Each structure stands twice: as structure tokens, then as C-alpha cells.
Amino acid sequence: MKIDILSVVPRLMESFFEHSILKRAKDKELLEVNIFNVRDFTKYKHGQVDDYQFGGGAGLVMMIEPLVNAIETLQEKTSYDEIIFLTPDGELFNQKMANHLSLKKNLLLICGHYKGIDQRVRDHFITKEVSIGDYVLSGGELGAAVLADAIGRLIPGVLNDETSALTDSFQDDLLAPPVYTRPEEFREWKVPEILMSGNHSKIEDWRIEKSVEITKERRPDLLK
Ligand code: 6GU
Image 1: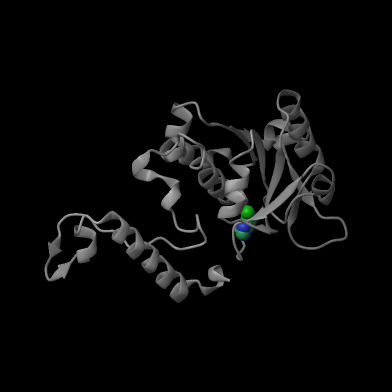
Image 2: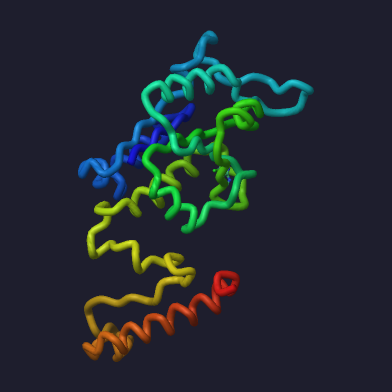
């Protein structure tokens, strides 16, 4: 899988991809991540990529030409399955969307800044608009990093048995059960006895029971 990212602050994201689980995905050549600077695609002086909005109002808008020049240049080399704009008014990102996107071959993520991007880019190039939650961030970069991480770790072979995605919270619309490791007793706090029983089917039942209990308590909306 390849994820290309367009940003005005590429350096903000670079270290994330060099130090997360995605680094391993890249090393194993299961995932390719390329970060491009929108400023490299502008024809305007001093790398200008934004301007005042028509009709007045506070806040700068990212101009259409640098973005379209960047998108079309990248499209010469790659046919994208989705061109995704990260924006607070997009569709709310969740595990189901991550699962779906992890099956794609080529994604282009576009990070907006300032007041947003010229609507014509959204109308004519963007195939999907995604938000990572009901709050406003100063740019789409954190959203792009969140998508890349959530999607990248689902690519077969990226995670090993110890980090398997199959038992994650949300993978079956349930939150994950509690987990324990050594020592068996710390101060007066003991690990639940069932986990020490060696009875795998009983343990599995206990985990499901706990998952349902925790989901009911914290996220009843997931059970509907
Ligand atoms: Cl993806 N971008 C921005 N700028 N703000 C957000 C967001 C994305 N998701 C929630 N808020």
C-alpha cells in the first residue's frame, strides 16, 4: 500500500512516520509513505499557497492552483483509489472506515490549513472527506497521521502476533477486556484467578463478558 500526503508543514509529520509502528511497515516494504510540500507546487512568489477569501471574512484559504498542480503531478505517477481531504466537517473516522481503507492500494491525503481549501478543489478532486473528531485542529496533519497509523497497522504482516489487530477495541464493536502481566500479585492486588486457570475456553468467555460489561458502561452507543 502507498499513502501519499500533501501538507504545508511536511516536517511536522516526518518524525512520526520514522518512529511509529509505521516505520516497521515501511522497513518491511508493506507500506510506502511519501510526504509532499504544497509549497513546492506553487507558481507564486515566496512559496505562497494561501490568500484572503472572496466575499471577505477572517482567515486565509488555500489556493486552488498549488493544490491542483500538486494533485495532478502526483496523479501522473499514481492512480489513487481515494483522494481524502482531512477536515473537521468530514465524515467521522472510525475502525470500520480504517478497515475499509486498509484494503486500498493507493491513497492521497490532503491536509488543509488556515480557513480551509478553495471549495473547487473539494468539488473536483476530493473523493472523500474525513474528520477525526468533533473538535477543531489547526491543520489536517494530525488527522492524516491518525488515518495512516490506524490504516497502516491493519495491513497484513505489519503487526505480529503480540500486537495483533484482531483483539483490538472496536474490532468487533466491543471495547477490549482488561489485560494483566507479571507479577501475579502486587501489594494486595491479585490477577483474576480465571486467567491463571489454563482453561482457554473459560478465559475466552470471561474476556467476552468483560468486554460487553465495559462497553455497556462506557460506550453503550456501540452496542446498538
Ligand atoms: Cl482531520 N482536520 C482539522 N483541521 N480539524 C479536525 C480534523 C481534521 N478532525 C477533527 N478536527
